[in-house]
Image (cartoon, rainbow, N blue to C red):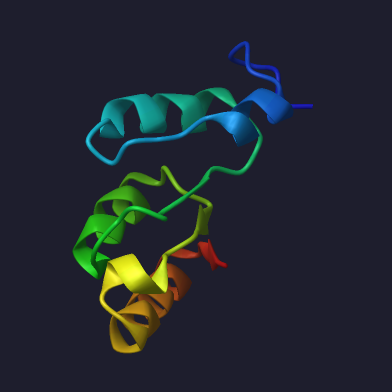
Length: 88
């Protein structure tokens, strides 16, 4: 179970992450074995790149209506593949 930092998997699933709080997301990622999924409110591949470079996201979840459409979502998927992150 993911209990290194005091969070249960159910608690992690329920949390909403803000893209402005990169340090907190990196810390949570470091403290748990549960995969970190985020991205519904990120607006471009450049927003995703910050999290991918930091190793703070395991599963990217771009919202096609927020990220700029199908073309931008494909670019995000390509970037995720390069960084070894899954995409939903």
